[in-house]
Amino acid sequence: MQGFDYRTATEAEILSRAALLEGMLVGEIQGASFEALEARRGKGEVGLAIENHFGIPPNPISAADFPGAGIELKVVPLVRSERGVRVKERTFVSLIDYEALARETWDTASVRKKLKILFVFFEHLHGRSKKQFPIHNVVLWEPLDEIEQQVRSDWESVQAKVLSGLAHELSEADGRILGPSTKGADSSERRRQPYSEELAKSRAFALKPSFTFGLYVEPPTPFEAEELAENASLTGLRRGFQRFENRTIDEVALDLAIRPSRSKSHAANVVRSAVSAASPMSATEFKLIGPTVRMTRVDAAAYPYEAMSFPAFRHLDLVRETWEDSELLSFLEHMLIVPVFGVEKSTPAGECIIREPIYWAPTAQQLDLIELEWTDFRDRIDRGESHALPTERRTKAIHVRPHARDATDRDATPGGGSEIKKSFWLNKRFVQEILTSV
Image (cartoon, rainbow, N blue to C red; front, side, top):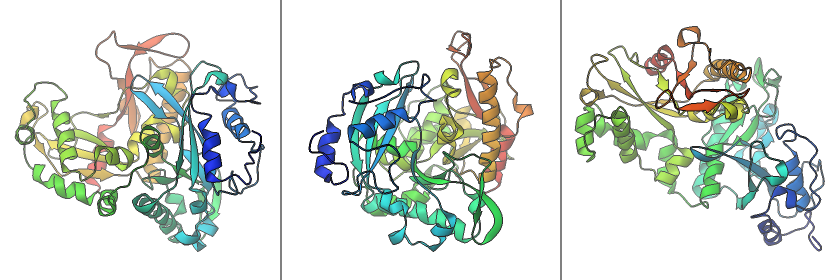
């Protein structure tokens, strides 16, 4: 590292030094030290090793990690499952000082000064020593043009709640790219806010995992400014979807040249294809900032015939998650729910009628409820109780039940046993409340 000084290094010098990390194992970094036996107990050791690669000392001052270039360093863990690789957690940017935020403009915002970031992506391998974690790639990013517009919009949404005395109503669902996360803070910790006597959770601005994963898989590309502004409010998608509303699944399938099928997933596939056809976003844009799309078959009172499922989870992965970085939260933060009306539960799927989609971003109160129930399920599974979990009747928002091909489709559980694969489901009554409250 002779001649490299993190304090005065230029952007080009930093990138040159960073490029040496690609393809390395964390344990190959000179001077790396690992003492914690469990990865989750030594969570910061990988970050310290990578900082050591750049000569950055532990516990630096609050200035940028590379002061001369104004660049922050963020180390991002990836995890792999049968569905592929995903970013493991949100990327913390800066704590939110509610008093200071109320006085800022976007031009003077403290978080804006921390958004030129060098991302180092490494893979977290469960059951393996941190020394064996591979470093995949590095990406230098800062919000420019249309992306900056969206980040600014996210920041302004948070500030607007603070100025209205509603900091206690902030949630992880506020913001499409940059959101107010409780990560790193005790969920019971409360702080004063201006314009209200009610205490609010301690929060930090953080980049969403779906967005940072997009930076990992594909270099940043510019979006069309007008389209991105429309996409953020979903007005473009809603306008485009109107041509599919009040038509049957079979009619829309014919319109989209989708072959008839008796598959149980056929109606959902038609709805997803209709959303894709209606959206002005490209596939990449939709993946970065688009909502989770779910179809639900409902009766005349908008009561679902079935609970709403999410992809099956891995029991051993679930017990390692925190709520803020859970896969379930990433699905829930922004959802587009498409009701499909059937006179009866037995009405053939092809004859059911597509209704207007409902965009749902959970409120802070809804997320608090879901977090409480999710934590209970996670802890029960960790204690080896995955065979006897609370049913839908015993919960208010979510429950867990089988989500497998057949009885032989099983998953390893804590303690060495196995259970049929399961997933989280939104309760029918909870979904009805969402559909009828907008």
